[in-house]
Amino acid sequence: MSGAGPGRPLTHWQHRLAERGVDRQLWLLVPALVFVVALFLYPFFYGLTLSFQPTRGGPFSDYARFFSDSYERGTIWITLRIALPAALLNVLAAVPIAYRMRGRFRGKRLVTTLLVVPITLGTVLTAQGLLNFLGPTGWFNRILLATNLVEEPVRLTHNYWGVFFSLVITGFPFAFLLVLSYLSGIDPTLERAAATLGADWRRRFTRITLPLLMPGLATTFCLTFVLAFSVFPSAVLVGNPAGETRVISLAAYQAAYERYDYPYASAIAMIMGFVELVIIAVVLAARSRFYTGSTGGKG
Image (tube, rainbow, N blue to C red; front, side, top):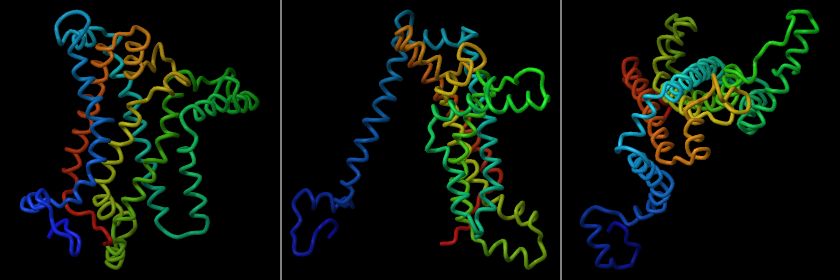
């Protein structure tokens, strides 16, 4: 019987579980459930409850306060303006590289390692590298000035572009690895069959590979978007946190740890999560319009 070892009788509660079709091995899920509840569900519901307990006014006053303040409300657009293009660029750049990396060639492991190295750098080290390379006295500007291509340094840090470049550098490895894994799951014999029928590589990619890859691209975009939308260190280190890169996570941080208004900070965090869910829902809904079949996996 389910959950019984050889020659080992079932206890009363094991009998009851077996009658209900519950295998006692399912108890192995308990540690994972405790982990999820302790580190995700409890903090989420605690923050949600706290957001309806403002220091002043009714339960929705902090939400109304956020949307009535143009300076605070504008952080949503600022964050979207940074996160959406960065996530889109990471996915678009990952597709052709991952498509080429499917085949076997000399130095493939070295190239793959170089592409995923930014994962090990971290946000702070990446920001420091950007400051040294793209800053007013960095190598890039020194080369431009030495060759007389510009008369004064080009501003690529402490503004929108500094944060954007940081998100691209740190987000691309995740997008690349995800796209590569989805591409590896597409049966290569489908393309070979199309090639025998006279389809060139463009038709094979647009008619076979891309439709099969579309669900994976949508998922990859959602994950890279969430990663970019929660940007915080880059907005401070290589951005302008008081102006064009004052993202919504920074607004929540300032409310919590500068003004010590935790209910208001929780309300901002809930708004942040809601915006993310809206974008993800739109992307996943659009995904079903491109392809609804299987992914053509090898197994």
